[in-house]
Length: 283
Image 1 (cartoon, rainbow, N blue to C red):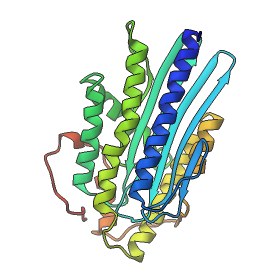
Image 2: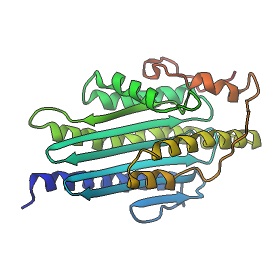
Image 3: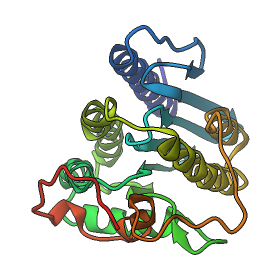
């Protein structure tokens, strides 16, 4: 018979593996003929919709310490489709356990409709745990998803939380269910945006701006990988953007949609917005 500790660990690994399997299937359906590789670190390369996507599961035990997680990083081909990342994990040491998670949308161009949709789906998910939880998780994400050396937002934020360990006799089950539901929320939060933007026309200007913004993504990934576990760092680094560019002193043309992105990324209550505009934000 399994001990309570083993039962918890097996349940968490099942959540992460199931989440990986289901999300990979969703992404492959959306990208037509593109296929992920096999294994714990599943990568898709060179798809029509996704230039690179990684859906990686980790699990490690060291003495009485155990951790397991799921990391998702997606780099779309069309610059109007935002990049995306999500990381869920579970940590346990003796009788102490907790769940953590982070979800972020990283656009190159601002669409208010996409921002509102994304944040509303996340708010609905958070409300299943506690109606007050979303505001706290969003503030944490706004603080975490910044480039400290540039003092600027990395993306459009989302939610982030650590050390989630609900109290009560069913606390572990509540935390596990919330994590499993969070992984399942990735598809309805992100994929409708992909479908809306994947066929928008774009040219070399938009591509070069995308590569510039991917440079920021790479900076953020390297910054966070430095403080991650080895398994988590390998998962993040495996899904770095396939192509990036850095230009010293680069500044977008004033009044352009590219220049408007900085203001668009400023933290705000997107979930409470009433806009349904499908217009790209211009400067």
